[in-house]
Image 1 (tube, rainbow, N blue to C red):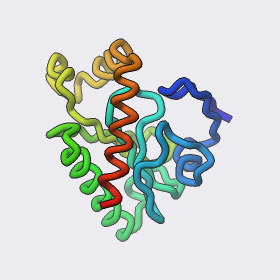
Image 2: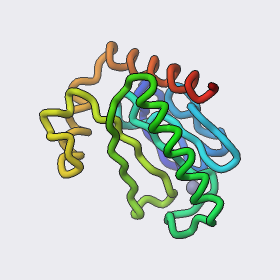
Image 3: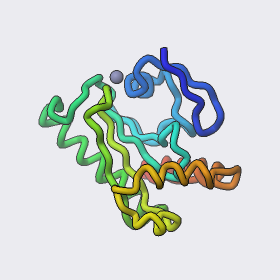
Length: 159
Ligand SMILES: [Zn+2]
């Protein structure tokens, strides 16, 4: 069993975070934003960046190479829709995509490029600095904005 304290200060236990979110055993902060038979979209539980989305597959696979063709097509549809919705609610006008095969369960990170990231050149080379800085500026106001953003995205996905 693994354990984290999520960005809302709640203790979460899980075996595989991707599987447990996909099977509703673990609730991500603010709940699922989008769900279909294959994928979920939710806020990253550990990194307090407003609108930092995780697009996860429900099936336990490690690599994009293990996806079927249908899953690949659906992945791109969900990815596209998520980015569109992030832009439509005015969260950001650009995103950065991250995916690491060293992770045991395939997921993609969709990072909104936010104004405060200007000082890090909005560059993937500076991702550690961006993440570390997000912890420094995290407070109740940011938490509220983060939860509001989750609600706005949920609404957008319903339309
Ligand atoms: Zn898994």
